[in-house]
Image (cartoon, rainbow, N blue to C red):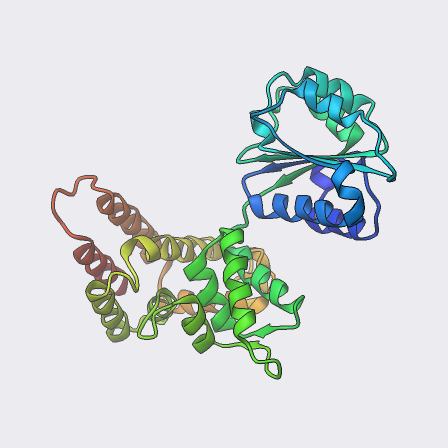
Length: 342
């Protein structure tokens, strides 16, 4: 049986679609999206509709013990090849000894799905982990990094025959963030808004459907800072100060920190002269994602980048009330942008 590190969401889904099932799917981690996708697919596709009443059971970890789950799992299916047992909130299960015993000799006719969100199996329980791996699949669903979001957005839309330009991709990534359940929900809304004869996402569609400000947004601010456009950056900050719902220091601080942190990393790259080499160094899926970092190196010296990162940390602390008795967020925004651009 493959170890968890060799198991991916795509490999699991390929096998499920080919109806290659294993007795146990232990799905754990901080990203609930992949856990839900796998468990929902199993619930919808393993059994025929007429088989589910007698052969598909959903339990909750806080309501059952490990012993009770093992008892359910050892039952035989009724007039069906399989029974499906889905345990939600598996992180709340007490008394896992009986489960460990079951994992060592699982029923081949039972497909047991354990959904363990917001964490993972205690690594000190080595025998328990080994038993899970011997029974089936142990999968850790990890949060995507910020730099992985554009690739996820592109692939999600491509799989649904929808194209998107680079600016729209970055706007969505910057404004929605790495909560994949929310992100895919917004993408579905965008897809539904597209006409049948023109399945392409543009910045205007992103603004209309996701609610990004039509005047200015965080992407526009980032672009102005990358290109050291002093006038536009100050115009956007003024707009944000007057329209807090359009953008605030709490929304763009992580975005700017991420950009300048990556820019600092680029300065240490063995080859930072080509866009392709920089993209590879930053582990970006597409070379065009490194374009802003090539521009950033032309506009910001390495020492200035280090100072900006330090300033962002200082402003972040002040925005949370540390060493800041009365400076409002709007003034902190202006202070930071002035420091970056001068």
